[in-house]
Amino acid sequence: MTEKPSLEGKFLNCPGCLLKNPHFWIDAWNAVHRNSLSARRRPDLNPVECWNRLAGQVERWTDQANAGGRVARVLAWLERQGVLHSQLEVLDIGAGAGTFTIPLARRVKKVVALEPAPAVLTTLQKKVEAEGLTNVQFLNREWEKVDPVAEGLAGRFDLVFASLTPGVKDVETLVKMMTCSHKWCFLCDLAGQRWYPTWEELWRDIFGEEPPLSPYDISYPFNYLYTSGYFPSVQLWADEWDKEDFSVDEAIVDLENRFQFYVELTSEIKDKIANYIKQHATNGVFQLKDRVRLGMILWRVDERWRNEVDGI
Image (cartoon, rainbow, N blue to C red; front, side, top):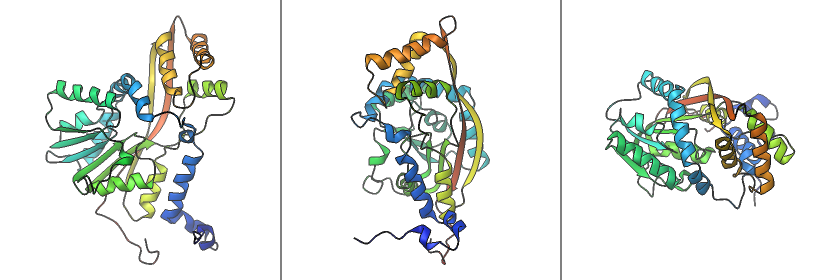
């Protein structure tokens, strides 16, 4: 088998040129996944089943996104960029409980909401029905397993939209977004390290080590698109998640559901979580605090500068 040529060797006399090559960012994105939180997920656990158990929390996150202004910020940016209009057809990847599906459906011709977890999708369907919306189509699929060409999705949408979804996790799933669009793509993800003291302290207690970093960071897709000749616009901002009060029992359930992705919830693990919550609660109330920086990028798939010298 022919060995893959080394990028370092190719650009030995120009180290900075590495950063201008899209293959560098493909490799970097893949490498961060191999050494990240996602690599620690339990291989015996079906992630769709985990999301089914989190259906109630997913709905709460939708409410928080609206209350915190994230939805309004994103939609206002899309409007300023001239993206949203009444004839738009949108694919919403990882639609969840309708954080963006519902507000988009109020503004555009049609939204196809793709959500892999049946319990979460049921919640979304009920919310769409309660809103009286008739322009939403539902797809109960995992984005990683979708074949756009075989399923008639290639080039079908004016806007392919993905916000904080684990489905867009590498260049393959990013390119799949572009395959489904004939004009716009939008992606929102973390931008730098997340500040989540409760999670970090519990991780150290349970695993005896520092928590791995999240593999999701807007810098990887942005730099891949930039070095591939696209013209992505970007905006960053700080956001607060889960800054709310829980009863002790609610907080225990919340954190058990989060840690179930990474460790079997034995009686010992459950005791560690419960004891932490009880020790840090005040008058029976526990406050979860989670601060992040987010980034969103918007680009057109039909606008690309091609460098004939580099063969991009």
